[in-house]
Image (tube, rainbow, N blue to C red; front, side):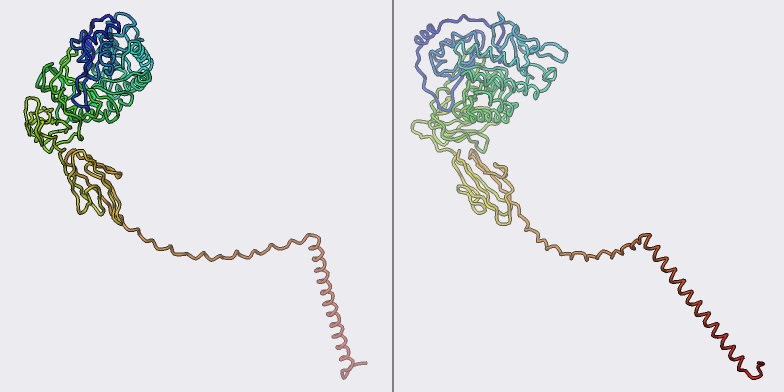
Length: 559
């Protein structure tokens, strides 16, 4: 929602005169229609209409103004000290028509202050202007020095003039509605731009809060990138979703389809579940009562105490519709969905029904109600993309909340237990809307619990909120018995073969002893030879002697 160029600046007037004006206008606080939700006003055009300043102060929780409206901010806060007035600043751009280097003109830095490196370039090397606001120059939100200068300027101004917080416009999850993302040289994709913007919020958001101010961002295309926008809330006090439930400034057109509407509803719920403020803005003509009723009813479905809503045809005028003042009391339970697609929520003094589909639907109210031109009706017919906010008739107590059936199924061998559930056996139960049913899965012997299906997942605890017909499945897996492994066969140790007997090497006889033995051996041999020779000679002599004797004694021998 960049502010128009050429914004007329209004000279500041003293706080005392603002207080006096507020006293003259009166400070009576209108009774709240419900404690679950409230309203905001965006008044950032050049000359917003505050002809009913006191009423604006009393019936809104937030008002957003530019720095040209310091005096109006002071008057509003004097009329309602509990009102929070936010200073508008554009996060992603610098403005070109500022009157002086120190004038912020709705941006955190001016083009006069901006370092040349902060101007983002396209792939042709040119500085980038917003395609829909030519007086805005795209800044490098990922630059640490830009982030520091932006925060210092905005915080200094907000503290000096007494604002309650800073509204960071153009905190975009995509730049496609201002320029072609692929032609941004430094950040040519949505993911690259998102990373740069995250770094800016991580730097700037905590600094704003540390200064005692609220940081609330207009998260552009939040419903198109819900996980991204949701994650940015960590650095902020809250977020705005423009085009909430309806976009465009024509009556009867521009309604979000059912899936987109559901995403927007979930976004509003998520922000509040994190303790953050949610600001929803629907677009249409200033007199489109049907669109206002639809957006307000959608807000009431999600409301948890920190949701606010406005319908704007422009950011000059404030629009107020009868349903905003209906006293429907506090909610008696969570939002729920009928089987035909009608969403409803019961309040202590009324009821809200919404048809986000493209078809005609009907809804039984369970009691007598009036409002929006209807009197004492117990059922309504809802056109596509329509809603009713109704108050309970005086003679009709508010109906009990609707009931819904929870059905549990079991696959495998095991059981599921919970309040009224003991399955197998008793596998379904009916509960009042908003009841939280806790289920526990127990595997049978020989089984293990393998996980939930349906409304629960994983293997942990299962809690089901009964806002419609619900089903849960528990799966168990049979555990095979452990395989008995026989003890291993004992292999006898191998026979140890004794090592072969080692024959010691022959003893080496020293040379001297061997020589002596050899000499003794030769001596013995000679001795034996001599003995044999001696015996031979003796034998020879003996034979000669014998022959001699024979010859001597023989007959005829000659003497």
